[in-house]
Image 1 (cartoon, rainbow, N blue to C red):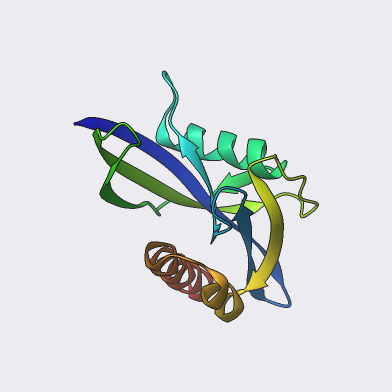
Image 2 (image 1 turned 135 degrees about the horizontal axis):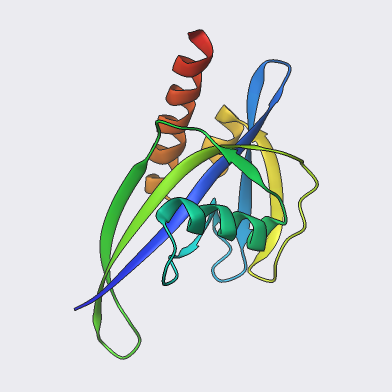
Length: 142
């Protein structure tokens, strides 16, 4: 069984005291999700997440300490090989909001929590966003 590790980041900026989250529409399949990709040799999970954000959306973010969310799943490759994929996510505050998409994506949207939750394609992404939003609320209430 092959093992693959990916890292991603849920980025937001504040608008009228509310977080606005960045969602990306992927070219392969047309699903809405967050920036993520394979962890390269010599990278930490955090470094990979920030690199993927820059490569896929052309923006940078400051990582918020104290948040890491992970999940894993299995799938079959086209050649029949079984793969176990682990995905690690972090949360960050965007420096700028002018997204420049890579060829991996066809659209992007900055969205309020409820709208973003409705647009996300996968249950794992919806659960991730719920965790991030709860983390942000707790952090902002302190």
